[in-house]
Image 1 (cartoon, rainbow, N blue to C red):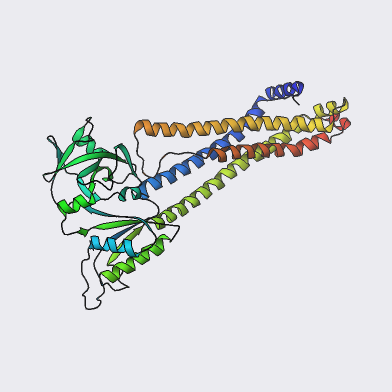
Image 2: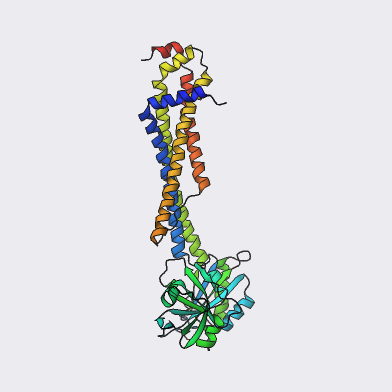
Length: 411
């Protein structure tokens, strides 16, 4: 039940002891603010690392060729290996647990890509429709991606669009690559920070092979693991074993083929981030604990300063419960208001940093979108308020047990 007299009394007490109130509130405010900023910064670090290092789907595995290092079945070491389209078909037919698979080739040599007098040396890649779900950092800003029915249509990055087309809409226009014209069907933006990713032109793999690579070789390929069927590591080993058999490679030759398993890298990065977040939580909790200790000390001082007043209250009939509730109410009010202000200031600070990064177009490596889980932030604030109440409980109970005669003797 709302008691106006009690609240007036609390505000009068706080007003008379402004310095004490400010110091108590600042300890709570600072504890929540530091926790929010630390959590936001650690999340920004995790987002930045993921953006810079995890350029592909976390269940993707990339396969590359090398040179053999061990003689096997009459074949000498030092052979240069090359994937073929037949390899990919055989793997897709014989290996279970593949969600999608896509080859990747690129155009070698000196050439320029041109459109109506504008030209620049961009890299041209051949890939199929399953390539882009694996390249999760590619985001379309205009048009559409390559699909199964494309034959001679191409797609390109936003940096390419800027250089060749300027402010003109590139969709439906034709660009020339080695005297072959390709229709633009989409423009993508690369969300990562890796150099050159946004300066690529992609054309359908079948078109690339017919036009620029009639021998059917494949530079590399990627698969996405169906994690409901198999783990990435198991799928990687099965494919490597199958490739070794097809290309007559010794089973122990680890230089003939090499891979990049994004699942392993993702687990390593997330393990590192978990360690960093745990450290941040320890620092944040210690900061909150310091605030709680500060509240407890202040409440002890409050009770000591008001001993005579409490004695008078008891002498005129105040119950122990009313005295405890008065002190607790004051404690909860101060911690609640200070905690809320700390929460609000922390969130506003993170939003301000995000706004500055977006407005300034800053692309900071290993740091992106600092943010905090609102549920976690509110929970931390509530914990601190409850802790503030508990911190005031002990001195409040002690105050309620003071005998009026003894209290009135206090100076």
